Amino acid sequence: MDISRLPADARQRRSEEIRAFLRSRRARLSPGDVGMAAGGGGRRTPGLRREEVAVLAGVGVSWYTWLEQGREINVSGDVLDAVARVLRLDAAEREHLYLLAGLNPPQAPPVERDVPPGLRRVIDAWLPRPAYVIDRHWNFAAVNRAAQLVFGYGETDHSCLVSFFTNARHRASLCHWEDAAREIVGRFRADAARYPDDPEFSRIASDLCAASPSFAGIWAEHPIGSSTSHGLKALDHPEAGELVFEYTTLPLSDLPGHRLLLHAPAPGTGTEERLAALLGAPEPVAG
Image 1 (cartoon, rainbow, N blue to C red):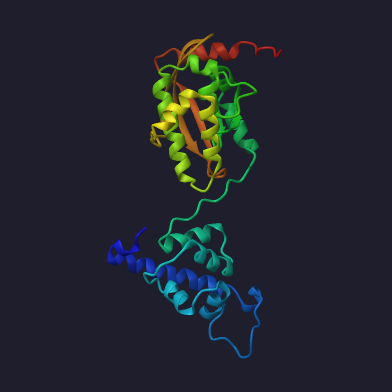
Image 2 (cartoon, rainbow, N blue to C red; image 1 turned 90 degrees about the vertical axis):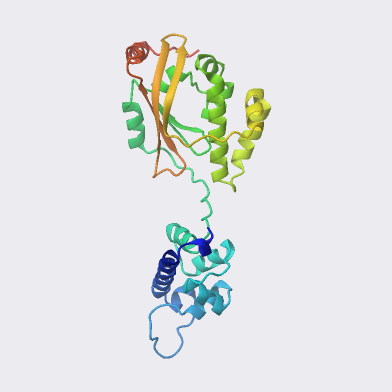
């Protein structure tokens, strides 16, 4: 973000905010908290001095003073990280500092977390309608029985993206597959751009290019998909016949990068009745 292009009143508010923010974080620390001797004599103000923060962060006293005053100076992520480390900022505070300084906060590394039992109950309670959770790399984190039966997901299906291009049953049943393929590749590319420091997206794309000529061809065209949270999905199920769903994608704040996909029968298509019949059938016997 180019701060110099902000309106004057916005720049003033930003200067006041960063000044108050950094002062408050200095005030909550004592020299002893950061391994410094308290020194003789009392302090007129609580907490660390600007000079102490600058020395501990390895930056010039004048530069840190200008930062705290909200002046329009050049800043880098490494320097902001050093200041954040000295001031013991947590993840949310560090992100706030980046934004106040006019930089985009770096994306946090993915944290592997299990889907909470409560969310799993929600997915199962969505039956007989399909529902599943994917992580930011489009791997399945939880899938209910309806999604398995409707979309043909089995034990070997670990990724929504990979299954779209390699699961023969899923590909054969999905209507307008070519249009959907371009859309899904575009969305995956857009997701990858949000995490430029995450090499997993490149690995997935490279592996899938080798495994699927269809994916490779579309990927080479560099489509960019929209971030729409709803749409229509139609398929010709080998047992149930035509099924048409309205789907909704919901971000999960407790699981960063994860999304919950809920499918509901489209009204007037007969999908609800055919879906109930399909889910009422006995589960297939493995073997």
